[in-house]
Each structure stands twice: as C-alpha cells, then as structure tokens.
Length: 130
Image 1 (cartoon, rainbow, N blue to C red):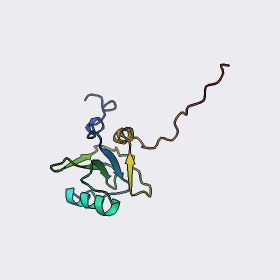
Image 2: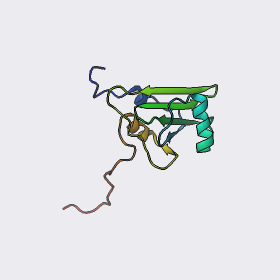
Image 3: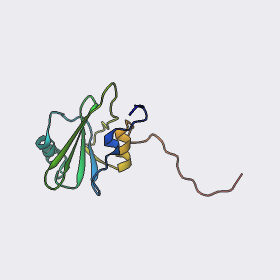
Image 4: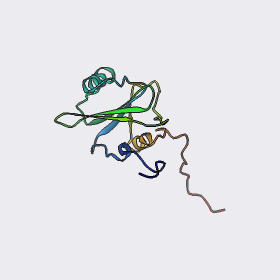
C-alpha cells in the first residue's frame, strides 16, 4: 500500500470465524507463551475452554504485539502481529481479567482505537420542528 495512513492492517480485515465470540485478555500477557501456554491461561485464569468457538486476543506489555488463539476443530491457530514504528494498540488495562468484545470493537482495536468510545451521539425522541 502506498498510503500507510489509509491502510488498515490485515487483522482488521480478517474475518473472525462465523459465530465465534471474541475475548480480550485485559492487562499484560507474557508474549513468550505459545499455543499450550495461552490455552492453559484461558483454562486456568479465565475458566473458559480454549476449544469453544472463541477467538482469544492477547497483548504484551509494550502494546506493540498481539497474539490470537483459535481452535479450528482439528488444531489451534496461533496468529502473531508486531506493529512497526512507534505504533501501539489501545489495549484495555482494566481490572477485568477477560472481556468479551463485539466485532466492531475488534475492528476498532485493530485500527489503533479504544474499544470504549468516550461519547456517542445519543438518540432523541421525536419532537417538534423549531
């Protein structure tokens, strides 16, 4: 891509498997962990099954690396992305251990945005014209 500002990375375009839930491991994850270590983290810390239809996302301390873990039925898929330059993900650092997010929030996260918008325009009731 010629214009880096207009380019949205492959992960943002990647379709999460149909019907899969998306879970974010909030806070820092040791990025040295591989498939077995991440699957064990999911089971022991989050009390979820890594074999369910769930797309798990993990981020390192520097917020420039992401891993995704997904069970495809015949084996695990482990994706890894490292951002170049000075970029970083707006990773949730709240006290929650694991958090389910929507597909839209996933796209925002992959585009470098926060998954919780500060303020959205609210709906208003029909009224009269001034």
